[in-house]
Image 1 (tube, rainbow, N blue to C red):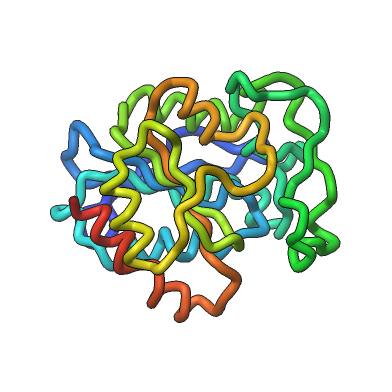
Image 2: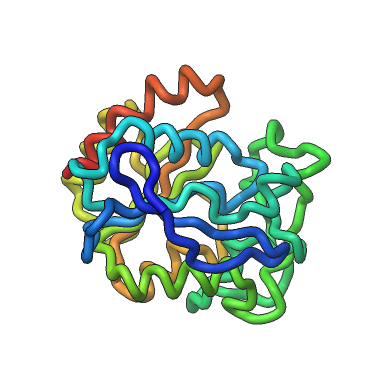
Length: 231
């Protein structure tokens, strides 16, 4: 299915709650340079909105990226971090760091995130890669073989690249939004996508935006993200 400006929608799987997982690629593209995903945590809906704005503002003819705006549609609709099975998808990847124990779902020192729908601890799933959303994303990465994965989150306002990521790409992205570059987000994230990418030697960037109204987020973050998709 085609949408505006040449982006083609593909259903890559279904969520635990049966909702479609839809990835957008430039029509006719056989290979992509990168994958941008958003909404893996359902209580971070601003990331989905930024991804949708990118699809609206970047002509697919100028891009060689795939965009996955809603990685966790169940959580996004419910306004909660986890999927329909109560699993934090960003603790469910089959990385060497995966742990069976429940994990913290926010970094210490971030009291503004301690709300009723953000529980102190979260399930990592029964086994690594147990969730259909995780499996669909892993299959997508294997199929696309992107050179870079960018994972949008909130609200820490930082850029955290994995060790294999091109420093020039990182600096351009960080400078465009005046964000600090950090080696990690400041707290353990066992079973996170970034850890799985690190294990595979796949360059990846965790891109954290701040809590702010959507117009302010777009003004700050879209220019750098648009430039990245056009490279």
